[in-house]
Image (cartoon, rainbow, N blue to C red; front, top):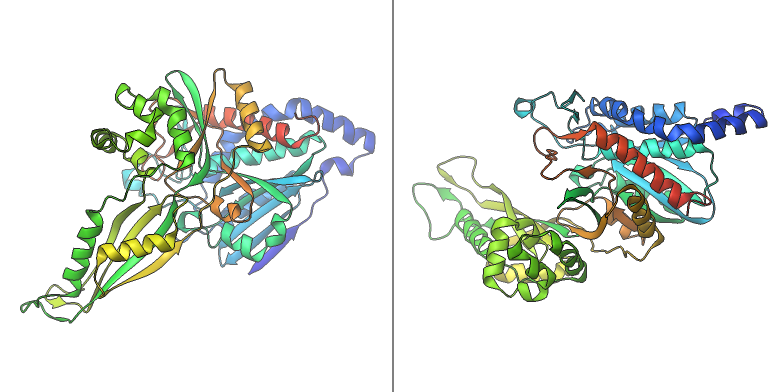
Length: 470
């Protein structure tokens, strides 16, 4: 473990008091737009840094972000949870109100250049978009947070609370070398932290109206490995049972199981909020989702057209990997499958495992938990949610804000476990059917979104953290 601290003397403190105050006033009046205009180029540079996970090498991103903070005269710290797995955070001190963390992750998923229109590490600008792996997930968000953080610092406005900019490693593989590691090994960072903004929600023009989703909870991942054991042998002399036939039968039972539909309050609120934007065949069902889940015809149609919506209504398990013999004529002693199960936030993992054991119904199969998190929901009755609402309302006429539930998971769960109110909030606003390529080919974000998104993030920070901000 390596931890470093970087202390700098802010530029305005190196000047006479009167000169420093005058320059701060000038920066406050003109600086916000300058930081927004600078965001696209910063993202281009960030995308050109290879932090694909595995192996991550997030220290490269730490060096880039650290240089920017150092140039701005902002103290920061870094820590490597393992060789190359870098994390960085910086704090603007303020008043006694609970602090706010701006969080994004440095690592990105791999990208195969053979399937991209541009080099995924180029940060190229084409057709008004900045292309590159991580443009959306989450280097683009990180740059809007960084630029807003720098603008807040340059404004010199007194703060009602500390503001922490944080960039971490390993989110794409579970966050155990990043956010999870910091929570465990550097808990003092999060003392008096009450709020956190992370990935997980964004905006889209729907029926001509800006609709923003703010993620308040997420389905809980429970990753499992099922291993069947039986007598090995030669492929020419099959036995009545084998490890492979056992694991195949178990897989079929799981694949054929539809876990019961159940509507939790956060999902009920989400469906009710977005009902007005649905096709006619779903509109009433979304408004009355507790009754709609009992309608076989409705659920069948919804499953075909919106599988993501259906996944919010029950526990799910996807069979994603299978292993058996390494040789075609050998019956192996063990065979296994791996399951990506996602549980509703109020589901007991222990009760679910007991249910899964009954479905498998084979004492020769062992269930191993690879990864699992605890469930948590962040309330919308908070000053943070109110501040996000105010900011978006000022920027977009007829804006609608929807608390949402994510089928995926982010690092927010680490902080919800600490009692920190954590929202998925991105300032980007996408056009109808605008493709972004997240985790796929040709990931990109528009130049316009980077500039406007930075302005939104800056205004939000000003509203939530400064004296007189609201």
